[in-house]
Length: 297
Image (cartoon, rainbow, N blue to C red; front, side, top):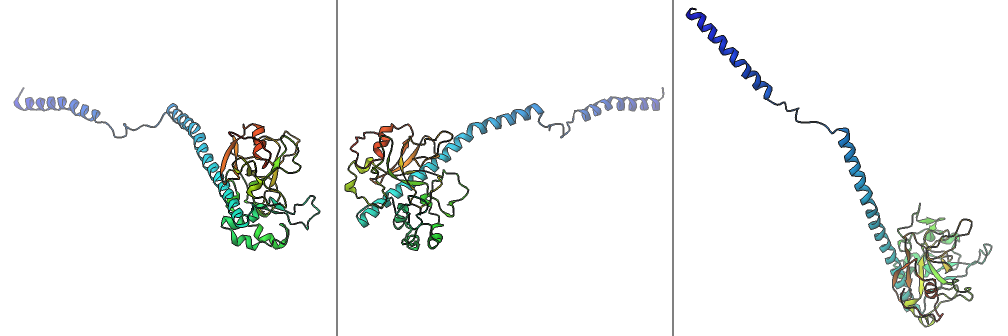
């Protein structure tokens, strides 16, 4: 073999030896797209299940926190109302009546039926609204329609689910005055602290103002209007009691908080009463001069 043939053979040998190295080098270089891949179906289902589980665990806790906040606002509303009762007492020497000129039947349209919540307005920074009410006219008179349609936030419990803060065109009220109790005996004469056409003073509350309920929750009821004196009732059943099917629902201390309801006491305080409270204790709290002994509640 001549020199030329040897040179060509060497070049061919060099190219043959080099080619596999070059090819392997190219094969070993990873593609940037080979590193990314999507979730498999199983992995996706696991992620969804974890999210659902966390939601199921956390959502009730969030709802409980929100309800606790709403209940605190409601309690503060009643505390303000209790203080307004005492401001009324300081200014006029007596608490406001539960209402004036109630209608015994619907035909007595000439009777005014104005509520305790009307007379508290000046002591709730609502003096202008109070002055707009013509107290010589009934609560549902045309002359009082505009004033009655005003919403007074302190009369509303934030836990009550409602379509509108108006009830039949009038500002709603979720609190009622305690007229007495029918748990232990008929409420005649009325035993409570919020009476129709009669104003009581501290000296009439011989059971003690700290153990006498003046106002209680009764949210979302049909006649719940702050101008309407039907927001007065006597207690006949446990707190949050619901009637069986077919029995008419009565105005009672009732809330949507669960576990109990808020009340305002005659000493200017407000507190949450458990629906498990003894009926005898609840009855004693609803009277002003029954002579009952109330220890803890």
